[in-house]
Length: 484
Ligand code: GLN
Image 1: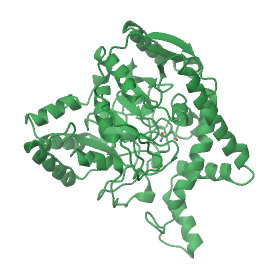
Image 2: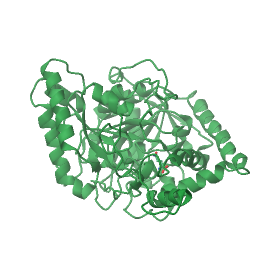
Image 3: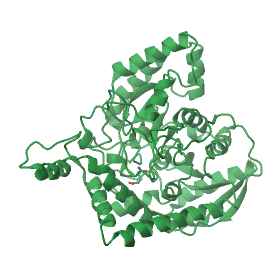
Image 4: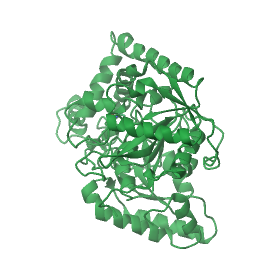
């Protein structure tokens, strides 16, 4: 069960080689064995998971089997799941039991997939190392002294150590792709609006997007089939024609034009990461693709722009945590104002407070035009760079992250160094484009991810291009030593 793809798991369930109950028990026992070391899960609810598995087995025995029916999936703790504790990695929501399902969770429930548990994450998805979680940092199974990346670090650690066959994540500036890169599996951030944000706790609403995290592109295609849906409950959800992302995986990629942005290969890129990326690009050439030099001239502005826009939106989204409606409330206070202050002072961690301060500053009268408005204008320029680039190529490739997994604590006290982790991922969020990270090699026994960026709604094509690479490489199947 450990190394089977989602397709194989599904076939085995359908053939009754094993039941969903057995499969779910298998992964729950792995979680029991490894979670102490990895801290990948915040909440496990065995009885809920097992009763979902029984329901799935019931459906399978009646012949009502859908592709992911009975498959246990780890859910990032940013998604509300009815009856489950949903913390978003924060003390603020430590005891919050979600009263309804996020659309992503509902979509999985509708096909009787099993909720395997809620995964650890950076507080309110702010971070690149999973060290800002109120529930403790997550370890990278490839090296327990290293971070798994963030903010979807719990999902990443769980997939890498095969504590779950697949997981969900969210990506506001790189939080699916960077941990996928650092933990050695496949992660996809879809086009903005393809997957509903309803019930997904908001960080920066114009950037947040949920996506699949799993060993292979084929697995991600199966997951995306369930995750993508038009949703009237999310006003930014796009009415895109329903696609089956598994159908084009085997298309040949002869003649594919791969754009190589020169800005992704400059200072700051670790030399051994660069070498592995170049080897992967060579492999694509052997598969019949052509490399084209391109430029994304405003790339260096992506991080500064993001760190104006994302905190601005976050400061607004997080104003709801006031101790009145739901979530944490301070124990002792003098009056209403005092209650607000103490609640937010005690309920939020340091990084979240930093973002709220930046956000309220850039939105305040007198600074709005200089920072927020300016950032929005540059955001448009960044999107235009991609528009120009896609006139010359079909897909853009480069590194997902500038380095392999770094040591725990190494960047914790240096927010600017931490922010640089997303230097290659953030511009696609600003433009709303789909992008993925696939395992491309190991450096010092730590994974390196290759990033693929597509044009709007070209998830199917990206998955096809990734799948072709994975047909002739086995980096995505590697499991960290010591985890078996
Ligand atoms: N690391 C980035 C941040 O801290 C992106 C996080 C994300 O994608 N959720 O904001």
